[in-house]
Length: 72
Image 1: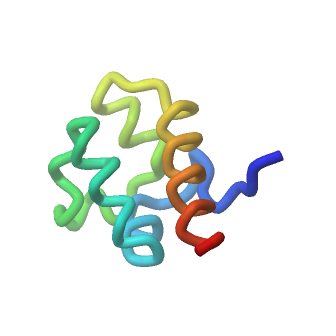
Image 2 (image 1 turned 30 degrees about the vertical axis):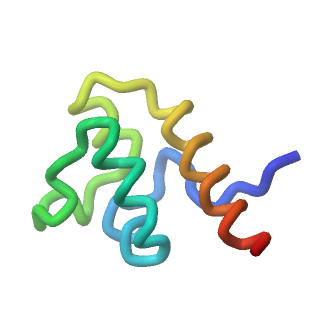
Image 3 (image 1 turned 45 degrees about the horizontal axis):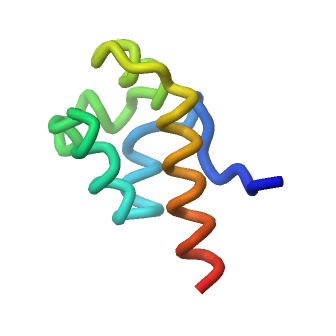
């Protein structure tokens, strides 16, 4: 089973600060406001909702990317 590094409740700011390479995934799905002060305190689930996205695949993609980085 895959490790869970982030979940829907994890704040966007925490994700980007801890795993800077996550910005590529988030920007790639349309979250271009990563530097906005409001987004820094927004949960991943809330950010996905604002962008009309299902949070579960985003969480899965981020965790897969992070797990791959951790394994190196």
